[in-house]
Amino acid sequence: MTGYGLTVFEGTKPDRFNVRVVGVLHNFMPKQDLILIRSEDPRLVHSGVVAGMSGSPIYIDGRLAGALSYGWSFSRDPIAGVTPIANMQSELRRPLRGRQQTPAAEAGRNTSCPTKDAPCSGGSSLLRPRRSVEDALTSYQMSESRQPRFLDRDPLPPLPLMGASSSLVRASVPLTLAGFTTEAFEQLSKALAPYHMTPLAAGGAPRPNAGGPEQFESGGAIAVNLVRGDINAAGTGTVTLIDGDRVAGFGHPMFNVGEIYLPISTAEIPTIMSAYSSSFKFATPLREVGSLIQDRQSCIVGDVGLRADMIPVRVRVGGPGRNERSFNAEVVRHRFLTPMLASSVVGSSIQEAASDVADATITVRTELDVRGYSKLSLVDHTFSTEGVTQSKIASTTGLKAIGEILFNPFAPTNLDRIDVQVDVDYKPDVAEIVGVALRADEVIAGTRPALQVTLRPYNGAEYTESVPLDIPVGMSGSTLKIEVAAGNLAKPDVAPPENLPSLLQNLTKAYPARSIVVTLQTPDEGLILRGTMVPSLPTSVIDTLRPGASSRRGEAYKLTSRIVIPTRGVVLGKRELQVKIKEPTAG
Image 1: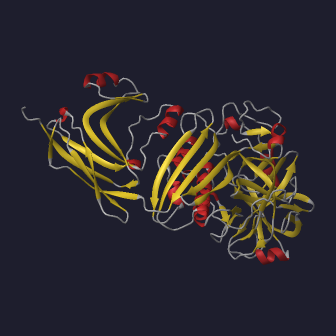
Image 2: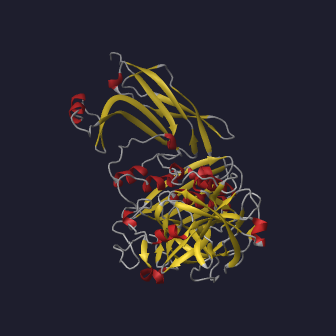
């Protein structure tokens, strides 16, 4: 049997390419066959199956048979696999649970919008009917600690990328990036590898008033927007079928996460790049025209009557002797995607504004607007001999807190804004703790000896800080453990959170890196009971408050005494010391 397909080779209008059926692979995927086709179109004979053609509708004897979706890597022959249209049509009819019941994305309180006609309860919905926000589209209302990594969850079947083997594989989705630095590009490539996407520095940012199609058409390009603004990231494929307000494309999943809400837009294809491993389309997103609602085995599904909100990210970079530069972008609302994309946007912005590879003292102030709670303000100080790097920025407590909040086990949360202020001072304002000492191997209980902390500044002479210690009388005959650490390495005494407010409060409790923290481990015990730390309790009371018959028993912890000494510059390192405590002498 013979027929034709539709895809965009250049510009925005689809072109035909002739095809011939060569066979059928039955049950290629669970309950899904695969039609094998071959094309003698000169453009495809030259390039082979092109990444970005995923979803190209294939018509056999005048009837829509399915979507081009699979190909052979390292093959220049234009042979491809086609997902049958029946599998895609079933996804078009799949009912939605709505945002409130969709755990893959953080959902707000009472913000379920299962259909475009149902009113969204609450003014801060993540998914709103098109009619209710049409006037606001130009100014969107956006409303490693224990941070789970994006790679911790791989919902896709174990299929390789095109270009990774000589087997029949999914035609990869080109993730075109614009505005990302080389380091951010490499980290995104590594993070997205399990999701069978191919990051390409081969895309452009949408231009203001650039025009372009205002609606989808079969064979036209469809872009799923992940980041937009001064920095852009979008996965591009082809529209297969339009049914009312719903549109199906790709012929295979993007992330295969099921129900999900991401902005979708029309796109322009400047040209196609031919390659031996995998040819691909250059792509530029144009007009936003709907929201992705399904990401399934056989296709993605969008709804042109819906809009998906994004989270605004603002990054300001300044420092002594330089004018401040500002970067603005939006990232998608999704528990697994947001932390990674926000980190890449912040890192790329800072590296662009402060690209010097030199000794740098960096201060990062992060503000996170969590819907329904007070704004979180977190400050980090760090030092780097290589200037500002992606890894340095990603390790800040402010960016780590994004994952902590979105993956919290207590309640769904919404981030309404991420604001990062970075000051880069190109000088080695840093010192390392290289030694701690007392005048004697034994100290007397109840006395106040001086602890000598030796610091070595970068490119400078060592110096000593004297820290008076109060030795408890009750420690006679025991061994005292003393820890001296940079502030950011000293873990504050906080109880495990019992609810979301206590988790948010814990995130703000930290010692600054511009300080030395001296910790004395005492023999006394306290109790952690239902999120509250109760210090200095008698043993009999502790035993009473943690009964063995309850599953929520109190947890004992060793009391510590802390001394915090502010410093001018960033402090690095940690040292420990143990000393015996003698009883006081008579008189």
